[in-house]
Image 1 (cartoon, rainbow, N blue to C red):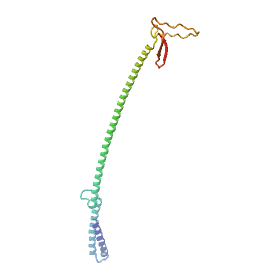
Image 2: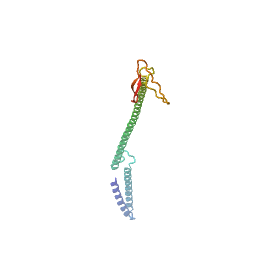
Image 3: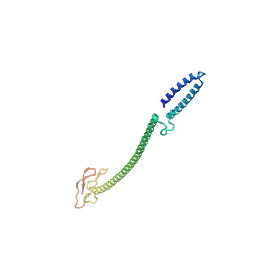
Image 4: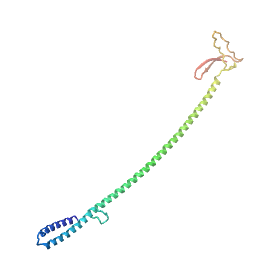
Length: 207
């Protein structure tokens, strides 16, 4: 079309030059009119060619066949590229949505795992606390039994029989000395060893 337009412009310029030369002579009236007819026909052809070129350049309708050649090919390539880009965008968005869904699921699983871990830790802590309390209670009971047994076994008798103290009492403030406690008949006063609960060993006199 561009070549046609160039050729038409060349022909038009030639006809205009000839027409100017002919119509400048008053005796060539008929020839001048004929040249005008040719010029009008050329104008119509040039206008038609211009309209076709303009339509080809604008591709206003985008309908198949309305735009051909380089422009049609370029339009098709751009349209195809746009479609590919749109498809790639949709696939990328789908991947993003899928990853967001998986991430949300992972976060939920993590929260559940943390809650489960806390629950197990609480249960174990409660069990350990109960075991400690039970152990402390058992130790207290055992200590009380040992203290009772110790007091019973370490206590001195006051019957004059076995384990009754028979040493001289401490002297009074005035230096007086009370009599030694007497053991019952059949018992005698003698030295004995006594161990305190802190390990101290004492030498005492008992019946």
